[in-house]
Length: 120
Image (cartoon, rainbow, N blue to C red; front, side):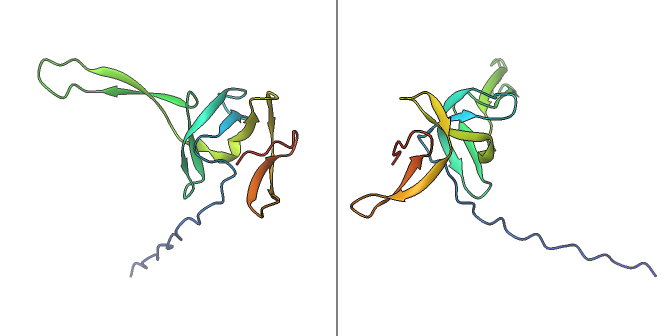
């Protein structure tokens, strides 16, 4: 008799609290694009990944769709893990970690640790 193995049920990924948002300027701190600076185009909190303009660029060969049309090589940004990017201050030109603080009116905001600059 052959015993049947039970497959482990995969738990749904827990949404990760991201330190970056769409529109933030970030600097890559690891990987092939280390040191590059770009803007976050899209944040994917379920996968804890971000898509940054000009970083992690992949090429894709696209077949022709209609007869007589030629194929193309398209470049597009692929998602990268949010831990590989750090918020960047364009004023002081420095990357920094963030902390969360409250303003006088009681609003919770993100603040750069190195410069004290409030982001939100």
